[in-house]
Image (cartoon, rainbow, N blue to C red; front, top):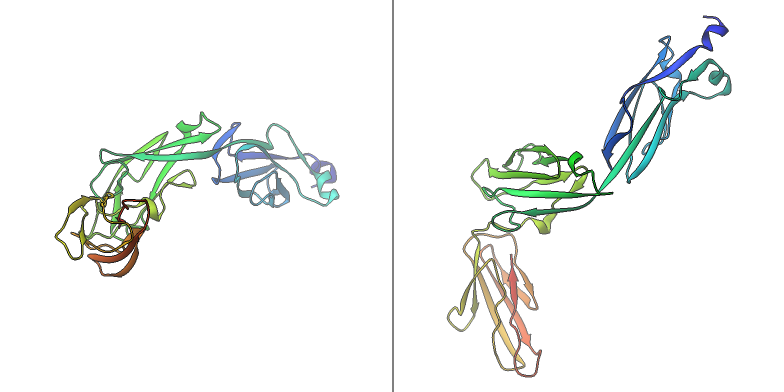
Length: 276
């Protein structure tokens, strides 16, 4: 090929096409380009990416980590003598991206925010800027059911995803993560125990004074300065008990003992909340 022919090489982005391309922060975009005539693809240089910001060759993958408008270009690689041999057409060698963020994710079911087996639950995402909710992709990750957890459905698109978790092995093991775009909808604190769980709270030297579904707080009227030992017993095994305002003394999978000195207030104090 002569030098004059080389100056007629053109770079054309073949994928993605259309503009702008809409996506969420953290989405990986895989871009492809070709040269006309073909065979000069190794000379293509990509610029304007997010992470990574640039690359070379016929294909390039990048991700924008924050909302905004971005322009990616596929053009000639350096050095300058190479730039003389490859030209670009502005319309066909650039791609514009509109990136939105996920500002919040909420969830709701007929049992409140319970995430557990057999309870359909709806997750809802809002976007920043608003208006992109219809483009939000949803995905449920269960580590390929490694912990015996499955969901139906596992994917979706739009402002909401309604899914139902189920156990594959009949145990109480549970592990799942729900993604709206690249944003996580759950963390460890968001995964409450089995909704069948009930706690009975005892004064250790007296009969049970109340039964507390889902560990709701209970107030006791006692003399100021009293040291109280409390026992919480669950009807199901739990990983741990969390006392608020009390010091745990001992525990096993179905009970926990805690001690608290009731010194607040002139006449009465509130004795320990429990959680599991």
